[in-house]
Image (cartoon, rainbow, N blue to C red):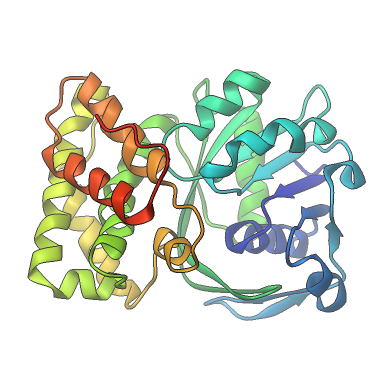
Amino acid sequence: MSQKIAIVGAGAIGSYYGARLARAGAEVHFLFRGDLAAVRAHGLKISAPDGNFTLAPVHAHASPAEIGPCGLVIIALKATAGAALGELLPPLLHERTALLTLQNGLGPHEELAARFGPTRVLGGLCYVCINRLAPGEIACTTFNATALGEWSSPATPRLHALADLFERACLKPRVTGNFAEQRWGKLVWNIPFNGLAIAGGGVTTDVILARPDLATRARRLMDELIAAAPRLGFALPADWADRQFRVTEKIGAYQPSSLVDYLAGREVEVEAIWGEPLRRAEAAGAAMPELTYLYRELLHLTHTSTRRTP
């Protein structure tokens, strides 16, 4: 894990994680799109709770071929960009390359495993509040933890080596032996707060908590997801919903990533965050009326073309 690292999807999350890893001594190469010129000229400017720093110079690239094979590829693209990975990843791979995906929702991990082999795939869950302020400028206001897990097995020495690297980079790793369960647990926050931020009229998390109608919907969505968990083979703590509310109270007026995309006119990860969890829960026999309503609402509001209504 101390080998060459590529960041595919150098937006807010990818740039922040990559800058931290590079600052800790790793050789990190970033695949940029729109921010390439700014980063080459001025570096990556990071603001964070533990202090601000600028990473310069940056290994900033316009194509995967410029980077070449790496020991670790960190994928921080939106789940909606999954089709592009078939072209982006092959130039970065050798026979032992590990793929760590920091993508939201359900589906990206399975797609990577099917295309590149399950033993390559590692999963990461980012419990953070990070936004891109301008080209090459990233702000982190809250950083709680990064959950790391193997996709196809319990924790391995490879995973613990990755956690050691993340620890040195101040990325607060937490190793899990059941990544799929952790992923469902994070959806208990992502589904209500990302969704209601849009459905509530473009509002921040503090507004969701303050408005009784939205707070009530958030709680019902959480309770529904927690009730569905055992049918999927997961066991979430009894107070999991209460924990999500307590954490959200501390982060203040935060725009979830789906709201940021929605307001910017970009494609929202409707299927990965709402559609696929709904389909899997219903296939397992769970009744999901609250999630069904929110999913259909978001399909309409975002004009999503993949209208796979259950």
